[in-house]
Figure (cartoon, rainbow, N blue to C red):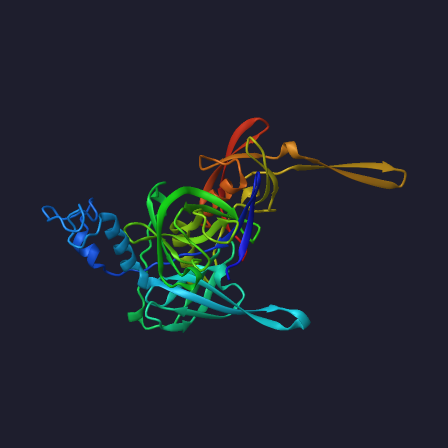
Length: 388
């Protein structure tokens, strides 16, 4: 069974967030080869005789149906079924076996598979099943709990592996069609369709951080879809299904996916370095205010401090009474810098600030605009590499 998160927003609890996932593969579809023309996808052939419907399609299929079929045929062989076995503590310190299920996407001919971290978290055995029913043990290459990403590897023959093609999620539009393929309730390679309902959503994660820049969709996803791909009409992976908002643990038409821009940036690091290398601004804590982010603490000798940014100032008063010296500390928070933008992008929340910083690489410079003593100023901060 998939794990649940609880998201409570404003007026009350939205419900259990069932974690899901994504994948990517590429095959050739007869429908794509025969019907696709640049700028006018899957339109009926000119002059074709009317068949079973008004589109003139000889097989009686509408252009929308052609798109659905092409996406499925292009990608379904790149979607895998992931089953796990682990242990949980029971009475008398006995271990009781537990089982889980999820989905994944084949990344390359070397056998790398993308899925959610929560799908394989705590698993002692991982089995990856391909489209042809063949199963292989899955070995964890690396994972990142903060973004709920994990990469597995299987020792499967290259001819059995059909990598999913990664697309670009930075230009998505609300209302654009979206397709999900996964294994809901263990029903392998199930296709569901919908639209992109919204962009740049954020949700709380179990690491006490937030999953940011999420894609909201209305395509039906359920337990078992975790780790499966979200696709566009060109069969490109634009996200990995990660969660649904639900009171029952089943689809309510409000689902979320990790964008492919995040995947493209982090997965190569997981494969090559075994971890995500994150940039560090040296700003440890902030207070959110209506005007911006008030710096609560900076790392000593860190990037922010070296660039001249400062947090609250501590004043120490000493007074002597007879043979004794007494000290008292006063924290002046009004002396702290108020961050209002990063590279010209307004930042009034910690999420906005982190989103801007985490899209950069260690060694890059960012311009942080801040207010000090009522005057607007700026500082160039060279980002460092965060500690493992």
